[in-house]
Image (cartoon, rainbow, N blue to C red; front, side):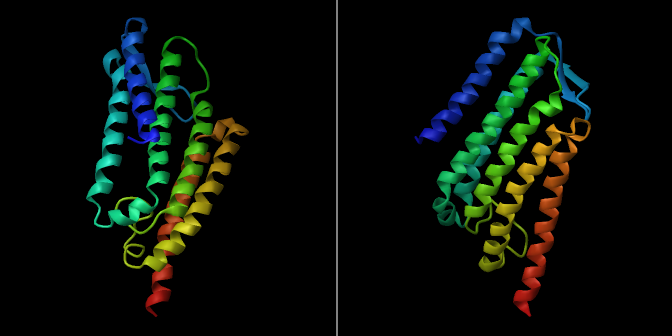
Length: 211
C-alpha cells in the first residue's frame, strides 16, 4: 500500500476515534450547519453529528479508489496516479478539518466558522489546479464535457487552462479573509465561474476544431 493511502486511512481512523472519544462530551443536539455569515442554522442528533463526516470520508475514499479502476481509459489515469492519490489524501484531510472545526464549536468554543474554512478551500482549489493540469484524458477525473471527451487536443487545452484558473481561484478564495462579510462568496463564485468558463471554452475549441 502506498504511503499516501496509509496516511489517508489513518486520518479516517482518527476521525472515528475522535467521534467515539468525544461522544460523552457532546450535546444531544450538535451544531452541524452554518449560514453565510457564520451563524449556526442547523443541528443534528449527536450520533450523526459525530459519525456522519467519518462515514462520508469512508464513502469518498471508496468511490475515489474504485471508479478509476472501472474507467475505460484507466491506463491514462495511471500516468497521473500519484497526483490523484495526493488529491484523495487532501480531500479526506479537508473533510477531517471541517469535522474538527465542528467538534471544537460543539465543545463550546465559538468562532467565525466560514472564515476558518477559507484557507482549507484555498489549498484544495490550488491542488485541484495541480491535478487538472496533469490529468490525461479519461472518463472519471477532470473536466469531462462532451467536447473534452471527444478530442484529446481539446482535453489538453482545457485542462492546461483549467489548472491555471483553479490556482488563481485559490488566491481569490483567500481574499475572503480580508472581506469577512462576503467570505463565502469568494469560495462559491470562483468555483462556479471557473467551471462555467471551462465548459464554454471546451465547446468553442471544439467548434474551431471541426471547422
